[in-house]
Image (cartoon, rainbow, N blue to C red; front, side, top):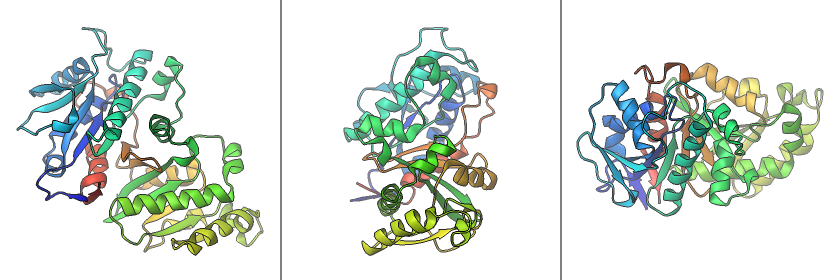
Length: 340
């Protein structure tokens, strides 16, 4: 079955509040009240009620927050906000703009609850507001980004979860998939193996089909400058990446490469671009679409997206946060088609 914006019953999307001391609750509120979002889905917020109320007051918002326990039955009424309340902060305990272990724990607890709701069929997709890695580090909880976190929450091997950055560039949707992510460059090179490259291409193809692209075309980058110039600058392209591309093509996936990462993104006709390590994708995305990038976790059973900007502790509670990245993250999940 496919959900569409014209469906009689709109899909339910969980929005985890992220770091409650940052701009997460503010952009979650703004996105949940956005007419574009409400035309596409039924948003359900996951997080602490007091944190949400504090941000609403700072933004001068007068909204009725309805606490619910099961997102399956959520309804949309005027300016009402449906909230699965985690009840994490006592009165006056939250400190906007401050680092605290409680804030990091709250961000992960809200995301975990939203993912659990998706696994239970209570929501069709999850979008997470930004967390603060420094706050999470204070908790002692292992965390190196949302993709591996989603993997752990869904019982998926961490190496099977990948990040797809999505953004609009001159009216054309651009998607960048990372073979490796939050590891050192030296470690990333060790992780670029033929099985892993094959796996990320297959995960990208499956994700593209899941969001409604019937016949995806995928471009794959090399790891060396200019994709090694036929072996002048390394042999990973010849011995690892090219064989991986050949293997997936033999199974029916339309993949091409390896191409130089510095020129690949200018190529037209591709639905996704696969890069080998963090900076090959992130530098390009942030240069071309600053604060307008959504991060989609692929390879797990849950449709999960997050904004690709930080929690902006310096402007928390000042009604200055722009929710456009979160609106775009939601649109990319449910604005076209969402298979169920």
